[in-house]
Length: 208
Ligand code: AMP
Image 1 (spheres, helix red, strand yellow):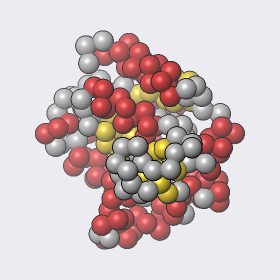
Image 2 (spheres, protein in one colour):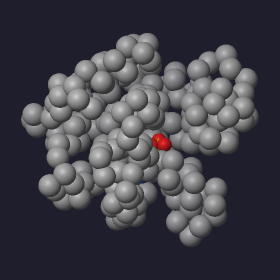
Image 3 (cartoon, helix red, strand yellow):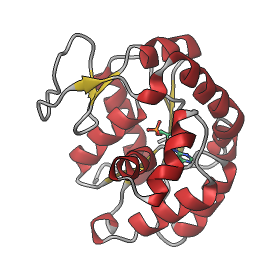
Image 4 (cartoon, helix red, strand yellow):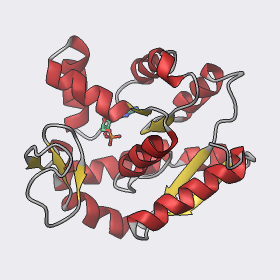
């Protein structure tokens, strides 16, 4: 799933993965878990994430390469937040060589809507669930809702700048492929989910 920060990739990827019984693989979640666990990777990732920059290609490519080899991913998977650079996209093509198709769904949301979404966003400090406005505790696990450290206004600006420079070029990288689809992310969550499901079905058929 492609799209700028705040487009709803995480929410939609979670939903799609649950409905289609495939794992959601989020490099952001994996890196945040490493930060929480205080591993060497986590210590390195923390400063990069807090600055709104990108963790090095080799590191995230290694994470994804390991993760998609696990048994639960043998029938397919949803990638959320990866690839984010042309180098990562090229590596992904190699990783899934022979495991096709790679369906690319770009979630489009205008920039002013992204800033508003990210600056008001609260997530569960326990399970990472993104809460809709007006909630006080996580509806999934009852955990406390917090503002992500990298959703502060300065870091949001940097993340959008990095997206425009490093990640947005992926839309052109993928656009000509027959498995590329673009959906309007500036609609109600259910409508976006329906459009994504239809987009994926139009590539791989309605069977999964
Ligand atoms: P996300 O939850 O997808 O917004 O990711 C949070 C942060 O983790 C990003 O701002 C990056 O610092 C880092 N990150 C996640 N995925 C990647 C990736 N594919 N490449 C580089 N850095 C990443």
